[in-house]
Length: 70
Image (cartoon, rainbow, N blue to C red; front, side, top):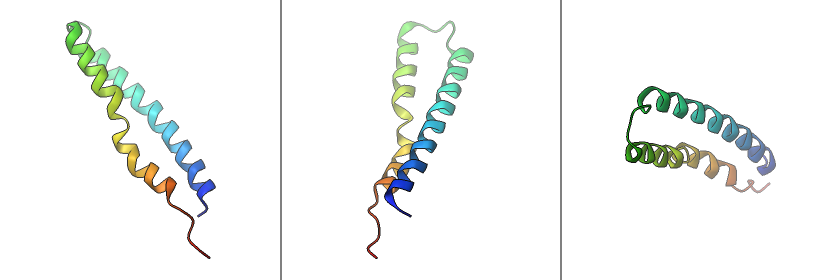
């Protein structure tokens, strides 16, 4: 599979993942954080805002693989 096609597929999957992850994070926040203090909310959003990258790393590695030599 050529690099350009892998990057296109990866881009679509990343966009879908970020949308689904953001919706899930918002639903969890609405369920557990309405009356929480500011420090807990800050920690939740800081950890949640950065942790979406971890599941994406294997996909990015796959996208960056060079084309096999013919």
